[in-house]
Length: 97
Image 1: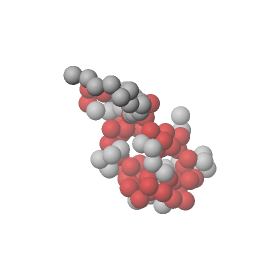
Image 2: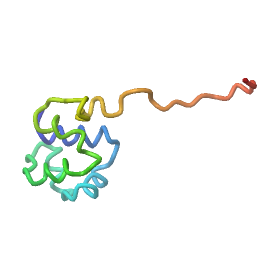
Image 3: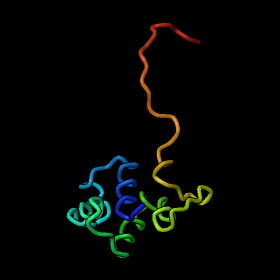
C-alpha cells in the first residue's frame, strides 16, 4: 500500500473530511488531494505533521512500517473503530426492573 493510500485509510477510519484532516495536521488541502489521488507521495515533514498529532499517533508504526503493536497502542485503520457499532432500537414500552 502506498503512503497516500495509507493516509486516506487513516482519514477514513477517523471519519473526517479532507478539509478537517488538513486543519488538524496543517498539511495543505492540495497536497492531501495529490497524496490520496496517487499523484505524489507525502514528504517526511508532512508525515511528521500527521504522526505528531495526538489523534493520529496510534497509526505511526503502521504508517511507517505496515506493522502494528496493539500492546503499545499502535494500530492500523482497520481496527481503529472496531468493536460494537452504535445501534438504535425502538422502545418496547415495557417496564423492567
